[in-house]
Length: 435
Image (cartoon, rainbow, N blue to C red):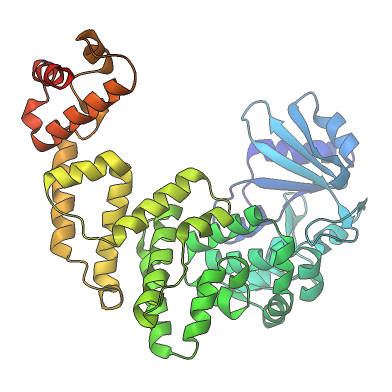
């Protein structure tokens, strides 16, 4: 079998061989190639030590000493800009923080290097001279769509608890099953996720929810959900054994899956669906604060604000008058409003019997008028006014807060009567306000 490699990748491997060393592409790029998927990047493993790797490539590549202690050097090809992480064969020492080894020992054995890797499907190496190297039957597991640890699962997850989330992420992304022994080890060792940074957990969960939202059910069953979204775990706990509610949860997850692969959209519907499920079926006030949830997971303010706004408007009926739609556009922007309408349509189709009537006619009317506003370039914000702050100062308005107040009053007039959005008419109206 021949696996595609970029020419710059082949050049690196050939350079090692021409100087008496060996090298292979390894890990995800080999896995993806065997699955017929395009690799995002190519990692290289070699028996060359970091200092020799630097000397071999310092004249042909930009060399970055990424993690010399762990044997990793980054090479950037000066011709095509491709980036390659080159790591020396190594044996990992003791893991004391459930994330990284305290020390590593370089080895001349490719097998020893592959033995330290997480899953068999990621523990294969390849070059054009020797072909596929697969000591742990990763190719067979790939064909059988199974995720198995290299060696003892409990040992692997104890070393690096992030591998628990990686296993679940691969299940979501590849639609594979997880080996039974690995599943049992995940249940036993899920508490080790306390040792993993929130940022790492967040990024793994993002990939899961963008790939297959049904993974949330597995996270709960494997006692992992409480380390990501404990609020959802509490809802599962309350409804455990209630088959109809579990069916509704699956419908929520299916609805999330119908959305574009946009983390804000998917989070908004996921959190809104669970929040309403809790409120509607328990008839009690439950502290389900999306803002606090996203802040705990250390999302950026832009993401938090967008999800908050979407959820806020999902709970209300948007009045389908042009004036009201423009007011909303001025407040949250076109992107967020379209996101809200997209989710409302999905909720209407799949979740009305859970969340209540969302009135499709209203949603479609709002969407139609929104399209008209955008297509006709109608004014809905101060920047769309045919007058500027300097114009207002030039007719005698004091600089500062008053200018903004005048512009806001003019915008309000234009939102109610678009025909007055002309320079001369707005100057007249501004003079009246100032006087």
